Length: 255
Image (tube, rainbow, N blue to C red; front, side, top):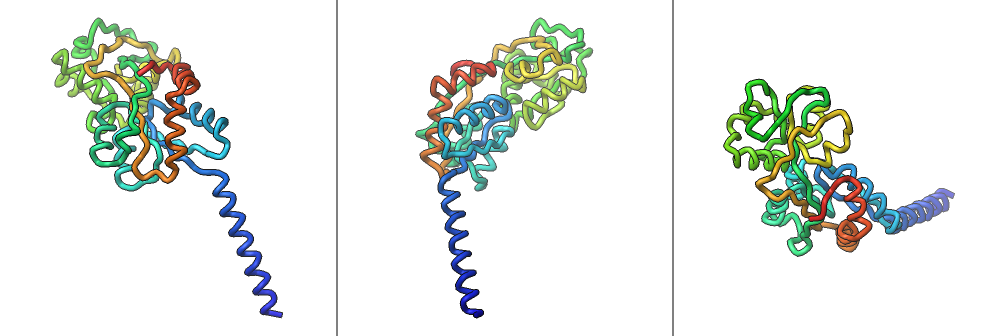
């Protein structure tokens, strides 16, 4: 009797494991690590991609570009990496975190200086940020956040980096800088135009920056992807007409 029960239990266990394996085979998880400024656009992109690729589920991982890059280098699972600047992607290529040949630019953006909606501050240029009336300016940490690097390059170009850096409220990513301005915790902040557009009348664009660095977004398949076919298909989708239409809806420009 005991032998019969064990055999029956074993058969059920094998059957259940088989069903689990089949389920996994039918739906493949694709992990996309993307810059924080892409949160809304890539959430919509991933949903659209899943509709046209019903066997694939996209898992999004958003954050500062350099932080995501280091996660990938240190072995965190990821199939696609999308950065908010070329510096982070260059590091990923150098450290062999991504497939160099898969790298492509897919969008561009503009850097803006925003202020709280109720602020009376007017900026004729970036030199105005040196005013003693401006106490706190936020931007991402240039060591790890693209918007911080763009801000530093722009301020260095007009000789105001040291002055503004003394007023800095460093953020972990561009969305944190946006939040600081929305809550009125700083006088001004550097963000991307697409981020400013998301919060409507809660902030005001005080100045549009002529960036010293091209504000372009690269994307690539990671070197350790477990879903190479789906990863390449996702990159292709981002670059396709439907993908570009979604990006344009959220304010991104052609690369």
